[in-house]
Length: 370
Image (cartoon, rainbow, N blue to C red; front, side):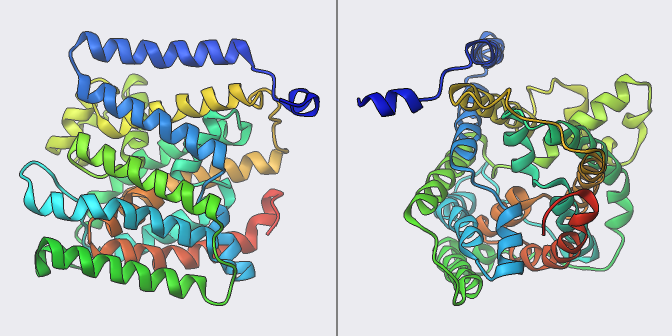
C-alpha cells in the first residue's frame, strides 16, 4: 500500500466499534440461548443491510427529490431494482410454499393519504424508514430526533388504522393469485421494468456501483424473506417501540382496537427481539454503527439548527402516521409490495409523489435545501 493511501485510511473509532460489536453480539447471544437461530440469522442479515446502506449511501428520500426536481431518476430506478431482485424469490415461494406470505394491501384512501403524509414527512425529516435507521446508527443527530417521533407517529397511526379500514377501498390485487406463480412473477417484472423506464426517462442511468448495491440489497431482502416467511419491513417494528414506550408510561395501549388484534397483541406482550421487524430494525442500527465506527464518522456528526430539529420531529411524526395508514414505507409498502406482485406497491409509489412534492417545496422552512 502506498504512503498516500495509508495516510488517508480512516482511523478506527475503537470505543464505538467495541460497544456496537458487543451490543450486536449480546443480542445474538440472547437469541442463541433461547435457541432462536432463525432470529440470529435475521439479526445478521439486518446488520449487513445497515452496513451496506451506510457505506453505499443508498436511500430513497434524495432519490425522490432528485427525480422531482432535476429529472434524475437513477436513484429511484435502483430502488425498483431492489424490488425486482427480491421478487424473483418472493413471488413464486409465497405462491407455492405453505407458511410463506407476500405483502398485499387494499388500494384505497388510507393507502393514498398515508403515502402522501409519508412523502412530506420523508422530505422534512430528510430520511425514510430505512434511512432513519441506518443514519441514526451512523450517528446522525437529526435522525436521533426523527427516530423517536417516528415511533410516536407509528403508534398514533395504529390508533387511526381501524377507523381507516372503514373507508372505501378496492380489494387486494395480487398478480400471482391472478396469473399463477410464474405468470405473476413475469407480470411483476414487466410492470416494474415499465415503471423503471418511465422514471428513467431521458435522465442519467444509474451507475454500476449503485446497481451493484441495489442487487446486493435485493438479495439480502430475499434472504430475509426466506428466513422469516414474509418480506422485510421496517415500520411495524418502530410502531411496536412506540407502543411499548407508551405502555411503560402508563397509557392503556393494550386496550385499543389495533393492539387487540392477534398479531399486534402478541407483539406488544412479547419481547422487542421476538418480533421480526423490530429485531431487524435493531440489527440495522447496530450494523450501521459498526460501519460508521470503521469509517471513523460516528462522532463527527453535528446537531442541526433549531428549525432543522423541528423539521426532524414533524417529519418523523408524519412518516410514522403515514406508514401505518399506508401499510409501510419505501421498504415495506413499495419494495415489499412490488416484490410480492401486489399492485398496492405500484400505487404507493405514485401516491407518495404529491407528498414529496409538497415536502420539497417547504424544506427551506426547516433549513433544508430543495
